[in-house]
Length: 489
Image (cartoon, rainbow, N blue to C red; front, side):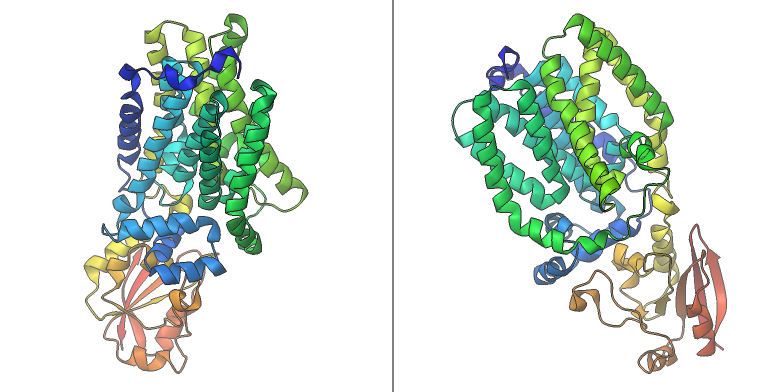
């Protein structure tokens, strides 16, 4: 970019080198707070089910299903080989990824517009409800945000320096980004617009070459993902339309208070940028606005015209861009009044407190999932070699509960289990009918049968168990699930 962004690395003085570490550590700690409280839910169970198998079985799964999350599954496989599986350990990598995103955003904001903007952007991005949500989600969304940030740092540094080495680095990070989550490829279009807005033409050719190299490296994964596009068939049109999904869900997770504060900051900050011509603000906005807008417009447009592939959480990687916009606005409003910067950021953070508390409630996951409550009940109530069967549920197998907390179910005999997910290169094992020739002898050996059913739909499993000679001894009605303990008559 022009004089606003010459030799950006020189802007990081020795006294500022600790800033990213401080921002990253603080964001990780804040995000990880109470992350152990919410129950696991279906998507997190999918992560654990995939990661808790051998490397060969993971690769077989990815060739058949869920290649879009493959790198994350492999990373979590390594992580789970070091730590036990529970709500805290499964989500801790996401909290660390939020910290990495905050650290990178501080670097980016400082390079573009100075230290106050860097700090303001890091704090604002961490306070966005979608970021707080991603940090307590055992999925790859927080990782996508971190990679998007550092990919953009690589772009800014490469475009401000001479030589091919940094462009090679950009291409490699781009390939890593797409392999980690194919939707991150949309950042290519955002970066193209950024360069068109701010950079001299000399940067376009090396950027195009680096981008082509990154896309070529990631092309096998892109091809595999396209061949698995049927796994997105579950996506329904956004409730309330795409406008509702974008304006209320994508960044704000329906936190109206935070949304209101954001709108006020954006309005006042935009006016301040136009009137005061804040130093570095235009350069920062040339990076941040395409980051927020371009992937959203492309994904929503494709979904509206061709095939619905839009889910608000899939665009978590645009959240740091929103944080950078908010950081620019806060600094533009406050100018050199650091205390006002701190006050505005405190108001912004406070406005996300409701979302923070809700997301970290016992049933704060989508659909008020109660997987962990079921697992706790089984862990404390069942005895080794008791039997367990799972009923059906709308859109998801209930045996995902056992995948989420395998330690609670390993001592039990899963009498209706058919071909395992690992053997079939699928996420979930097959369920056999209780009256099948395979299951009946297994049931006959059960002194206690635990039946887990969904309270929202009638389950034939209970009646099938009764036909096999079992009667309900005790039952527990949880938030979304009913657990029955049955014994032979």
